[in-house]
Image (tube, rainbow, N blue to C red; front, side, top):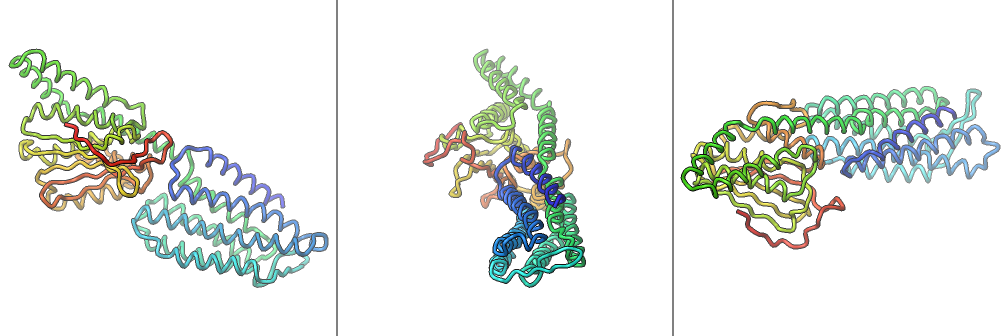
Length: 446
């Protein structure tokens, strides 16, 4: 009894820390929240049934039976949620659909029906009392079924999962398997609550700890700071030289205008203390950059097609300008920056924000798109890059995934008419301060 109370207090402490942490309500986190709540209920029922099963003559039989039915039913729900959490995690990491969900739901319904309908039996021994019979064995059958599903998911997707995720899932499955074997051999031990608690802790400490998520955010912010500090000095020198020549040829007015845009660019690009900014801020930074580039390369065209009602939407800081710069450097540089880059922002039919950066350049070199797709898909396992041509897009992808959820992010596609389009998918309307878009009228910014 004391062990069950201790386990309940431990899990209650974990739940308190988890629910008090700031996080986006993604499907994965909602599932873990449901798992924590179900586990707490199960541990409370575990403590209650442990008392009643050892006081069969004192507790009315209907009360004892009801508590045991609820105990078995709650355990089936907890084990099913463990499977669901692992299935969603695998889906997010690999992109594979959850094909076993139907079987898991059917078994859950059948097991709950059996827990409520089968007769409850008790074994009385000198070592202690315990629930016995078919109704009690629903726990073992359910655990075996869902552990098999989880083991199959882990084995089938071993290479696609990150090492941390493999360890968390593997440790949880081993813990529950060991606990089930021990309780099967020693029916009076009644340690199922220990297995549930240890499995939950395995996921929490490895994948869901707010301190780990906060450390990842700090790492990404430091990477963003480094990225911003690595702005190509040639861009600055060449732009300043262009301004000087323009001042000599045309007078102070145009030179002052260019200097103003250059100041705007650096003023906006150093806002590193803000995780989220408005879309208007991101667009202003990108416009300042493209205007300065157009001054150097007059044949470069840059268009902005943006829904005016989306300007106040919050987006992760410094995600658009690196993509625009990437389109210019890798799409139009070989053509002497002769061509067009078009930036669009719209609300999708699914109620999300989509930013796109389209160029009409030379497109991907052979094999390059596959390399970029692999880099973006394996962003979590890619080492933090501080140099190289892909530092911008990798940092953008990591920050979007971390701040907005794994269902959002950056992707590239080749245009049928030539060139490349980068698409950034972001949440829209999920935060109270985000403005919902109710119309799709657009305006062109140039």
